[in-house]
Length: 392
Ligand SMILES: *Cc1c(COP(=O)(O)O)cnc(C)c1O
Image (cartoon, rainbow, N blue to C red; front, side, top):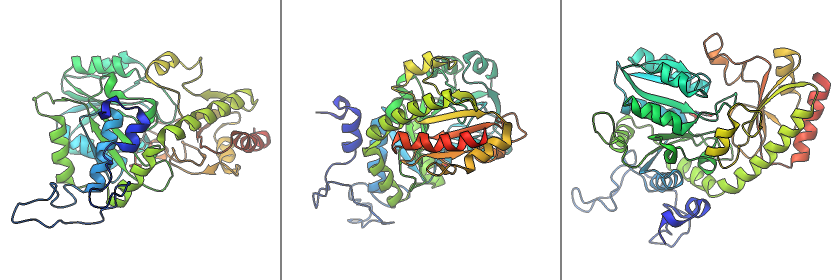
């Protein structure tokens, strides 16, 4: 049996995770170590020399995530943004141009706007839900198109296959932030993406107990100059050094084993929550790609296995009411982040997306974002109901 023949959960549980050759331990040990004994100068055992360059626990995670995304190679980082930064430095030089989504994760946009731009790589904004908007934003010096789908926080859907075509026609590389969907629901490489990035802090880790990032490169991906994307990312991962530590890598690897069962429950609960929100008189709009009235529902249905655990909605009464609702739930925890087993509620305008206030990426003030956890759905609904009944 080769890995390629195995289903998603079999890969999540076994890829990169052969029982330990010396002890038979069925779980890869946490190799909490910085350096390795050499058998004579240059005589490395198993290729390990120094843990920034490679560490066995991190290597297990990197192999596993690559198998889950159908990539040539995976890389694990200290955070999602560390992975993103490494990809950008690896694949761009000052003077290059990037197309970025109009509702990107706030931290991603800040990286483009306040770190990459002063460094010399400018960007244009596109509405990635509309392929023509992406096409229009591409310039002669565009080397990369960055896509997030579903988008954060408005749950827009980008057509990955169509954007891959437009991107490749322009001789650029397509990077997809697959954090919201997770590799269980969506595999961008199969749809034409060159690079996939994840904040493993979210669904991959899944338990709100670790900050991490991952990058997976598509088989055979090359830069316009014919260089291997894998080689460039590998070089920059080691040269920039923003790697995942062994314990963090181990936590993410542990999280991945249950990703499929968690995602099924996240999706079930999200569907129940969406039904409830649609029936509540204080709710003016519900954003969820699983809804037939979502503008790109058909694309979501084509490229995602199910529609995920993230939901956004707008309330009557505007920004202050929205912020109050977020403070009045008990089971739903008011907090940033997403993708953990516990349900979270937040106000993007004043929290996750506060850094984009006043920019072209500002989000509606009456918007509330939910990360639907895996608790019992009736409890989640009852808590939302009491907060909405009182305040809207
Ligand atoms: C959280 C998040 C990131 C950033 O990841 P960190 O692990 O917080 O650095 C990037 N993209 C999306 C979609 C996210 O939700």
